[in-house]
Amino acid sequence: MPEGDTVFRTAEKLHRGLSGQVLTVSDLRVPQHATADLTGLVVDETVSRGKHLLTRIGPWTLHTHLRMEGVWHVHPHGTAWQRPAHSARVVLETAETQAVGFWLGMVDLVPRDAEHTVVGHLGPDLLGPDWDLDEALARLSAAPERQVFSALLDQRNLAGFGTEYVNELLFVMGVRPTTSVAGVPDLRRMIVRGQQMIRVNSTRWERSFTGSTRPGQERWVFHRERKPCRRCGTRIADADLGDVPTQERNAFWCPHCQPSA
Image 1: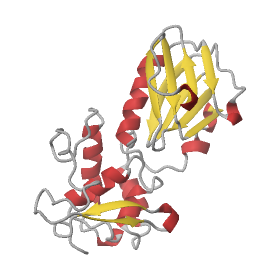
Image 2: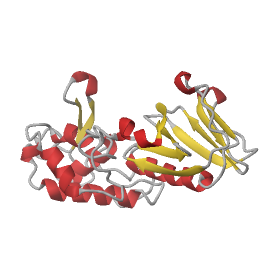
Image 3: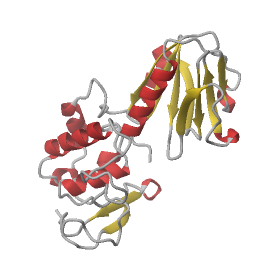
């Protein structure tokens, strides 16, 4: 599942594969940018911003978002594609490398000085060089009555957490997802712990929250509904939670280890 750590590693992969090179092919397979031609321009860098990718090419920024199924593959010319050709949304080539974005949820091409139009709404980036804990806390605390589950998922508060991180973080902190932001005993400590989690996982492909990377043992509660809690044996509960029905996401918790506020 693409969360902030996955996007961070994807940015590093694109940066290593393309930066400093001249594009020989640029094929944006989305209607609004189908005629755009970036060939002849130098790829300066790719960086992540929360769950968003910004590839800076000459005076332009290619903004992509993986959503649920998207992935970027970067490989030498002649390598067989590992996804169907019809699912390719972006193809970038240099003399040495081909980068293909499959099933991308967003593809935007904006002037570099207009990046704020696609990522300016985001809160502090959990994996960014300018991570600001105080700003994230201020944004979260601005709606104290809001369920902490939804508040942590809101990318306007802090950028990078998805449902897996939020569920696992709430378990580790002993906080039930339905608890209000104001009801969290130590919100600052929670965010510090979450930032530590995602930073550790950003350096490895085997995401883990339990300390084990063995298959089936990496998570405390996420998608473990009706299975016994690894700590106390209580059956894991689940529900769809969100501010409005159309924005509900899967929540998982241990009724014993995460008591009601």
